[in-house]
Length: 229
View (cartoon, rainbow, N blue to C red):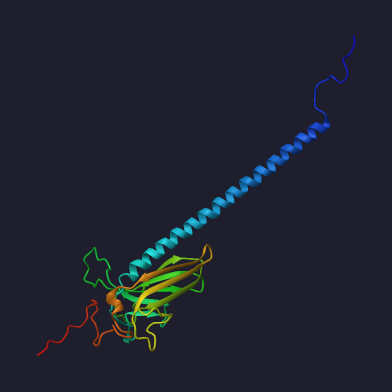
């Protein structure tokens, strides 16, 4: 019985197997790198989207606060008068009195509220709100952490002549501010700026005024004007 042999015998040579394995390895490596890139891009996009969402919420709250600024000064824990608007001149970078504080429960309180914005050394943007306008020594603020990863928080005011100042009340500054600019430097997306128009009620008050000649009551009402004889 003769055994069949020769070049017509089926199968792959070792060289062909090695070439095929090399091609599959290159394709697999390329697919892995592409998949890794897609996953990383999705993660970065999702992180940026979350940052934009938190920034949007923070700016909506800022807009709600700033659009309600009113010319009502307050008194601090020691009874000293504070102007209705303070920028870079107190313990907080931005502090002011706002109106429009909702009271759905009908509590016996004012619709005015004192709020402040602060950037901590850890890069947290905080919003403080007090339950009373004229504080007592034991008055505590309600604090919200709105943003993290903030490298810088700047506030500028622009008066009707287009002059920008970074502190208010400002010595020698006669024109009241008509706009307020907020700049946030974030770790995720860099610098973001927003400009808010100030309402006419607040812009009409000269610097340093608004605390009232007499001590306003806790309900947030200004002292009644004296009747003319």
